[in-house]
Amino acid sequence: MMTMDEVLGWLATRGADDPFAFVVTPNVDHLVRLHSGKPEAGPLAKAYREAALCVCDSRVLRRLAAWRGVELTVVPGSDLTAALFRAETGLEGKVAVVGGNRRLLETLRAQFPQLDFVQHIPPMGLAKNGAAIEEAARFVGEAGSRLSFLAVGSPQQELVAMRAAAMPGACGTALCIGASLEFLSGDQRRAPAWMRRAGVEWLFRLLSEPKRMWRRYLVEGPKIFALAWHWRGPNGQAEA
Image (cartoon, rainbow, N blue to C red; front, side):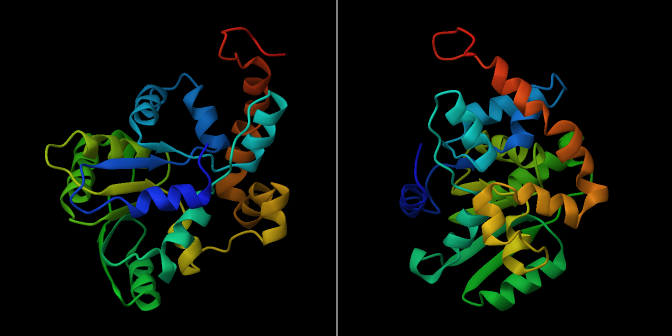
């Protein structure tokens, strides 16, 4: 697995005119969805297979993987996004954003006046709206931006990225980064550093937004333990 510096190095080599590629950042929620058997699981798995880079977003996943004998390097999407906006990474010119609202864009423009932000705000229910996915993908593929940030949550952002990758002439690199821009702008508070290091950032988000997050973290999330228990290793045998 690539480290943060290696991912940043790879992104630095990517130009606005390069054939389109995208980065996915799986966490517990994504892995549970991939194995849910729901209609979106198949397209999401296809998007993961087609991604240029897949980096682990979750310290919980890293610990479960270690328990199963697999070493994962954690590159949280929010940390990656923040790092890309530091001056030393050389982010310049046009930056495309899919998702968020007008206030988010105004805040980002105030924080980073050297950048030319362009934004597309898709409608609600994006995952089930083929025309809206097509429109968002066309915006990304034609933006002329070296980097695009897809901030519409999973599986929506991965579906947009996969569709953009299929468009003739699409260029640049897209990152599927969920709420990372809202953390960067201050529109959402991120967990303190000690909670992130301890792997309980999920608890902070649950306590901050219980009505929105309770099902993700208290109903769906715990399914990851059963998945880890029944995971089959490279030899096809169940690892117990």
